[in-house]
Each structure stands twice: as structure tokens, then as C-alpha cells.
Amino acid sequence: MQKTKTLELNGNWRFSPDPHKDGEDLGFWNKTYDDSRWPEVIVPSCFEAGCPGLDFYEGICWYRRSFSVPAPFIGRRIVLCFEAVNNRAKVWLNDHFLGENRDGFLPFEFEVPADYILREGNILSVSVDNSHYAGDVPGMHVGWRGFGGIIREVRLRATDPLYIHNCQILATPDNRKGGDAEFRIKVMNTRGTPEQIRMEVSVQAADHTICSRFSSDAETVMPGKVKEFVLHEHIDQVQPWAPATPELYAATVKSIASGQITDTHEIRFGFRRIEASREGLFLNGEKIFLTGFNRHDDSPRTYMAVDHVLIRRDLDAMKEAGANMVRLCHYPHHPAELDYCDRIGLLVFAEIPLYFWNDADEGRRTNAERVHTATRQLERMITRDFNHASIMIWSVSNETHESEPGVAESNRQMIRHCRALDPTRLIVHVSNHWLDFEEDDVICVNAYPSIEWPNGGHNPATYGDGSRAAMWWRDKLTGIRQRYPDKPVLVTEFGYCSFAGTHGHSFSEEEHARVIAAEFSAFTEALVCGALIWCWADHSWPAGRFLGGISLSPFGVLARDRQRLQPFHTARKLFRIKQGMSEQQKGTS
Image (cartoon, rainbow, N blue to C red):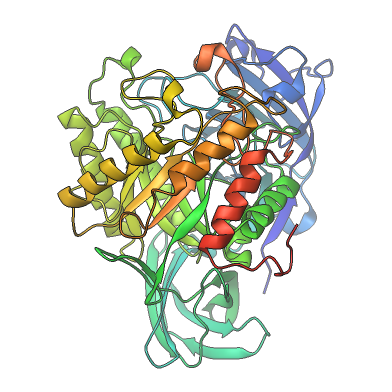
């Protein structure tokens, strides 16, 4: 057996802005183009890391690097993999155009023909465009700063031409302290000849003991075809995955042809059951009340490029503060973030960047191209993240103009499509209009009554105890429960603003903390199944769009540098009381 080989292509690249968008005509992709005077930049990174003065730049930048291919790669199937590039990318290798990608925040790959790649002296060129285009997702306007760049890892993989294309695991606990697992394994045969293939699976518990071994019958897979194997297994004595007991199991999945292993996938998963009813949300048959934060993938050190250290610190701090859920706003986050949520027991609310659709500048009309793009991104996100035990909810959009019938119907269509792709999770859209939830499993609502009362503008009457805002929440939540008595309600955004270190006025740390406490008091279990604070930390905003044009969102309970503000300590106290956490528990600060 030849194992899959991986060559990391991170590190030093050459970088150049292309504000006139003529780099393609000038041959920046050409193998012989002289890039020796281009500055170096470390990948993953955002545009801002490559050149001083690129703050708020929207347009094209180019990345180039050379690399050699290790000997074990030669003669094998070779794939060039990007974890994420924002927002559009075009890719060339040695003068050969490999293709393009228009879905930021999601992985993409190109299979490299053998005659495109050299043993030494390969030149990889990538054109990256973070401009906004009508019909794209995200679209013309969004509520976060659209950092461009190769924001996540790049690697080259060498595999057998008979390989595992995808594996989905549906694992649910039963009533006998066991669990049922279904493995849906897709195998691709690019060898050029028919192959007799069978699948072998072994499952290990966290202590490395083998829980089960099983295999499929051999089946013929024709050249150029994909074959799906479906294997069912009951496993005794499993521990369900839950925030308090995030028990993970490891599946080793092997494809075997002619007695030889052609590919192996290692997959971590958990046994859990998610249900929604008029009584609330249930995880493994037990009612759960969600408390948590909205988190943008924004770092003061790396901007929107992956910062693994900060991810772990943030999630650990949320967990310690009494959160059992994190909403990963407003786009697919790095898979390592989901891995960590699986590991520490933090439920995930995952979504695509369909936001502010349709904004005023786009004519407020249903955009068929955008719906097509959003549907594709939902499919890609669910395919990538299906096996993460922590994901509880898929969201198809955030704060869209659902007062327009076409937009509302498109949300409903996407929810139905997601449910067909994954019947094991809850499917929703997030609304600040509170109009149409016919298809949603959970009613997810955003509102800021302490800032917008009742028809926009800051409300001085809430300065102090915030009782009017709490009253507003109780009234509106009672109304939506009466309209949809069979669906639970989740407050996906509530919160307030403050500027770190400011005191004694309406946007002070004290007022921010008071508003969170006052509004949270309205979120009783009779009305909601949980509440998520907007947001975890201050993050970059589009310049000139919000709150008088400031470029940093001031909604965080932490400053952007992760200084803990007074609203954090208030949220921590409220959440820990709600979850019954003792101050003597390990990790108390």
C-alpha cells in the first residue's frame, strides 16, 4: 500500500496587488514571468499582510510560488487543494490554467494532469479577487470587512487513482446504551480498468479500544465512476456526545482492491440525536437551553486569515463562561475550529454568507444566480462538515429582505434542500423581520431594542435598567410563539455597543453590561430555547457603513485584542447561573 502523501505549500510566496486588473493580460500567471522584485508574504494571509497601505483594498492581488515534487508523488494521482481563498480565485500551474473558484470560505481542489507537473521548478500562480459582485455570496454588501487573500492552507496531495471520495457517518444513540451507525462511503475509480472493491471499517473509542469491525461485500466499480457503499452497524455501550460529555469515536475507513489498501480515511464522529418541538430543543432526549456567543473569524494579528491559537483560546473562554453553543458567523469557518468544538463540547450553529439579500443597491429583487450560488455553498458546506458531532443547526441565510415574496420563497426552498441533504440536523434561516418561518425547524430571530426603539435610532429611555427593552422582548416573543406554537424560538442575536475603557454614558461598558442583563431576563424557557449574544469580540467592519462610519464593530463583550470588558463578566455570570455551573468548577477565573 502506498499511503496518501501531502506536501504543504504554505509559507513564503511572492505577492503583488493588481489594482488595474491587467495582471492576467501581462502574464502574471506565466511560468517565465520575472517576479523577483515582488515582495514575499507568508501564506495563509490577507492582502494587508502583503503590502503596506492595502487597508480596505477591494480588487485583485496575485500570489506566486515555486516548489519541487517529492519522488513518491511521481506517477500517482496528484491534487492541488486550497482550504479557502476569498472571494474569487483563478489558478495556474506551469502555464496551465487549472480553473477557478467563486465560493469564499470553502475548500476547493484541482486534479493535476501528469503532464502539467514537473519534478522540480513548478510555478503556481493564483489570482485572488475580493471585489463584490451581484449574484455572488457574499454579495454587494455584508456586515463584516471583506478581507481578501489566501486565508487558509494550501497543499498538494498524492493518492492512488482508486480513492475514497467522501464518507458520511450518521450515528445515533438508542435506548439500550448502544448506538446505530450508518456509513455512506463514495469511492472513485480513475485507474482506467474495472476494479473489485470492498470497504473495511473499524471504530475505536476514546481510550483506543476497538468497538467494532465490519466490512462490505466486494463490488465492481467501472473506470471513471463513483460507487456508494452503505454499511450499517449496531455498536454496544456507546457514550452519546453532549456538551458535558463530548465523547468522540474514531472510524478508520479503508478501500481495498485485489487485497491491497488503496486509500484510508480517519474520521472522528459522535453519537447524538437532535430534536425540536413546541417544548424546546432536545439533545439525546434531554432538554437543553442554549447559551452562547456569535463569533467572527477575525484576528487582530492575522485579520481573516486562520489564527489557530486564537480560535482555541476563544472557544475555551466561551466554554468556561457558560456557553454551550457558538454561532460561527456568517460563513463556514475553518474545519479545525469545528474539530475543537467537537473536542471540548461546544454546539455549533453553522451558516453560509448569504446576508443582506437583497440590499438596496441590488434593486431588492430575487436574484436567481445568487440562489444558485447559495445552494451550491450549502451543499459544499454540508459535504465538508457533515461528520462533526458539534454541529446542531444549519442556517441558509441571515437578515434577508424576506418581506419580498421571492426572497421568502427562496429561503424556504433552500431549507427544504438542506433538509434533504441532512435530515439529522435542524435547518433554519435567521431573521430580523420575524415574518416567515413555515419551513424552519427553529424560529431564529435577531433584534436590538435597546438601540433601535421603536423605529430606529438610539433609545435614551433604555439608559439605566433596560426594563423597556425586556418588555419589548417579552411582547414580541409571546407574539411569535402564538403564531408558531409548535416551533421553539432561539434568539440568535441580542446585545449592545460599548467602547473599551469608556464609562458613564450610553455606549459605556457599564451600559453594555446592563443591557445584556436586562434583555437576558426576558429569555425565559417558556418563551425561548436559548439566546446568543452578539458578539464575542469587536471585529472589523466595512469602512463608512455603520454607526457613523467607524471601522470596528463595538458590539463585542471582548475588545478585538481580547481584553475582557464588563459585559463579558456579566454574560459569564448569567450563563453560568443558567447552566448551573459552580464557581468552584475547574477553570473559574
